[in-house]
Image (cartoon, rainbow, N blue to C red; front, side, top):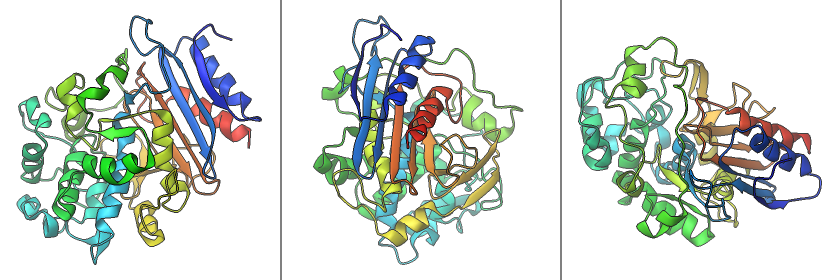
Length: 375
């Protein structure tokens, strides 16, 4: 047990999830966190605990939000799916058909499906840039389009931690005339009352939890050229804090929301394209194309075997529960969201004390294991 403030709802039979949540605090691994579980369109767990600030003066409330970093990718991939659904060739459309500038440096045959499954060879900037470029999405997208790929596109895959979102947003904007964040706000989260945003307005700043950075670096292994560009160079990311970073739209990295908000969106993967509230975002055939494995094998950026659909990770590593077909994504520091179609299950874990885990933070894995133990 712990004297940490913990609140929320746990359905009868799911008490072991609360036990695991409390144990994460009792072990000293948490500052503040939230976890939500939905099965068959019903919320069975929605809990939160700890503190939203460094000083442990602000309790983590029901409306506390935090960035979920790369777990944003699974949500942005749904918005892209809505956009490509109306293209005759869908994900097999060459990127340059909608974004002509992307054809530079021999990238004319790269398809949208290859781009969002981390096969384009553009994990970062090999040559130095001003990190402020990341805070100007149109200019950053243009700079990425001009890059030569680091490997022949389609021949291998390597995780694109940040560039992925700028490319996806440019494709969505070229197809629809609206950004990913705008579509989320106007067509999805706003109407459904789901607490998740990409591009955070100033009015929501008081709800944001303080992020406590990891105490050690992630274990990347040998620092190759793609890994250096993606993660290690001084210009590989902007300052991931402050108003400027939160207010722009980075669909790969700066989605902000609650655990329930994130689970409510990942539910689309578990329930045939339908999110919490009953709205169906995409057709079944579009969902099938989204989740079809497109890249499977050694990752040139992450030091592990990875498997991706069109922007969503597939559970080849076993961190997303017992079903190898479960879909999900982890985010920098520990956030994680999963969707298991076999169970119509969606779950999300968010927190503000970051760890060095790349995929499957142990805190999140314990909660998912506890949830499956209750089924």
